[in-house]
Length: 214
Image (tube, rainbow, N blue to C red; front, top):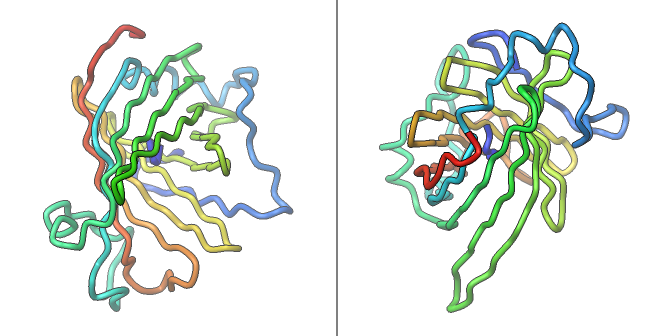
């Protein structure tokens, strides 16, 4: 998720969600299908199955840099991201299963290695279409993470998160092909300035182990 994985809804546009106490956020519950949901039938289906790979977190050693004139989201260049400092490499295993054409569950196992220790974190989440909007909700042991999505292309969903206090602003491009699943993205956190280029970047690469749930 994105996660980001992952992985809303006019082609080429991004819907940004601001999480604050005044706004009612979606739950993980499965809701009745509305007419607005119908265009997105089975959009999560390509993810069904078991995936394994690595989610890498990079940091620009120069910190946040000034952005040039641009129209649209920041360009995601995996080759450039790989030149930054690698902060963490998380081993990931995910099991996706569509319960309906509009509601999919995911079980996530993240393995962290550091200082000679290994830590396993297990999470549960859902991808869902609700009232014509795309949501990814992941319940981790210490927090619940909500991303809203936009359908950029047949194989690609853009996931965004924007919480103001404390700042957590994320952008992920999730692309799912037959046997590969990739994530490119970036994030702003804490005292970061969203008007500058992000210093934190992400690359996720996963391979399909099984398509049992398809």
